[in-house]
Image 1: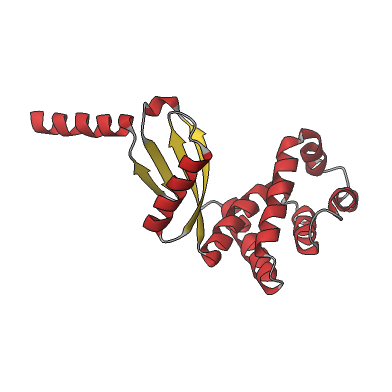
Image 2: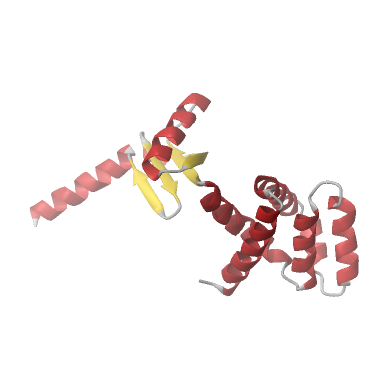
Length: 182
């Protein structure tokens, strides 16, 4: 585990504990997502926050001015602490770790569904329900179109990959035939 990953997990766990006390777990997750998306989408703000010649006070004032009415006090304070400690780059890692911790506590999990063509909303819901039953959790899926799969579906939940794609089946068949030929 990298040092940045360990740092992100510590911040995420602390944030989760506070959010749980205040019963705002889902709100904090949504707010973190919006902040991370905004920062990743704006190179100027990222550059500003990373400049060593600008005081921490000015950086925090900017963040407070932009976010004070849009996020909860705990999210804002977490961002301030990250800036104070020069770890503003860890915010996306904190969000990723927070979603894992919150998901475990709430019995939900994130899945990435890879398909050759885009699924309809109903089909994606069906995949979520099927794999939710399999995993014993409520699944929230995001879809990625991967034409190289040829057909079928691959579902990644955490570290586990369920491969029902045509390309995966062909690769397994090829491997089996090669092992029998030897």
